[in-house]
Image 1: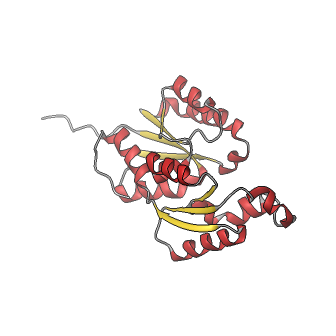
Image 2: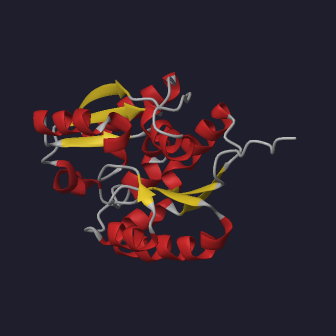
Length: 210
């Protein structure tokens, strides 16, 4: 009797907490029972120098439990330090300097940036937490007079929408209005994340849904 076929390698995805909802949705939709997710607090983006050491601790704790580990972070302001940690551990991360790039696609994001460098980007996560992360996070609830100091060089808000959600669309538009900026929506979906995880765990060109 032949031995049973081996399944995909047991894989851990170490991700930014801002991507948790999306990664869990992709995993459930595709039935990827071989993939586990561990997230670090999204608040680390306020102190990016701490991201590499936090990721390194996750990798060290998981090394003996998984055949493969992937990283769902951009460089995220670490100045290459995160990539050095990942290279030393033999762990791949999704291409792109930040989540805006791997949501929009690297070429599309470059085109958006070239067309208008003064763009403030929103994702589903940032729309949901706009008040906490942007308004209160920058102290604009207490000092609204600082708005021109923070956003005076911006010209537009581009909402990179991962979902079709009228409520989020309306909240994103309201956020742009609050900042006094023009507003655009680009529907990105979750294909960038799904493609990365499928290619690395199931093989290049593997089918996926998002």
